[in-house]
Image 1 (tube, rainbow, N blue to C red):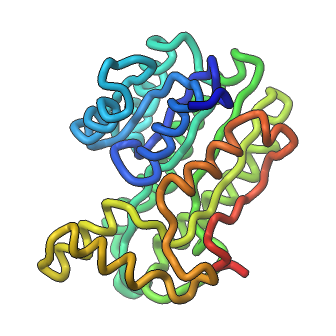
Image 2 (image 1 turned 120 degrees about the vertical axis):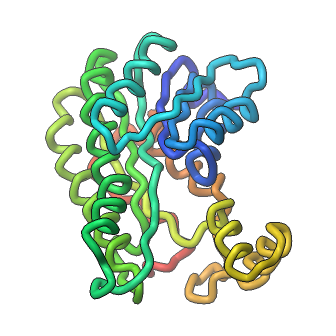
Length: 260
């Protein structure tokens, strides 16, 4: 338990699992009151109970942040429960596989909704609340592949690159309000989502899938392994707390050296 966010209020999106859940847990451990938001309400409730069974300093919110009214409701719920807002971590994200020639209107709508529009909507309603507290922080989760291409992920990589552009513009727009806006670019990360996908594809148990993924590592990454979600959460924590007080409009690469 630490105190880097003692007395602060944080809203974390995509908190039903993976990096979002790890971030919410770490923020709570560092003293913050945390609103967990995810489209999967049941997963969000379970994550909140896992952090604090008593409900102390946690709030679970089921919301589709790609809808403007839902994003407004989520921010309002956090403010009403905890009295304000000091930091927003935009972690929620989805993937679409395949080259651009296979992209459809539906797949574009789906990935832009979650990876870009939800970030914009959550930020739109968080900024005024952060300003009321004299400033605050926003951390947007992008991807190492926002700056490094690869085959078969055109739509995902494009939306994650867009997050970096949005981050830089927001940093300029809201600096006078005392709001710092930064991005983090994770590399390969071992999340429940990826484990479940591998298990389903190969018809094996979750335990077997995780064992395989750990053994396979990440050959293109200099550190030769995937990150644990908590390792990425520590980077988000740094950008969210006062230790990064002179950092805004920046991109933190948390990719095991992949971008090198």
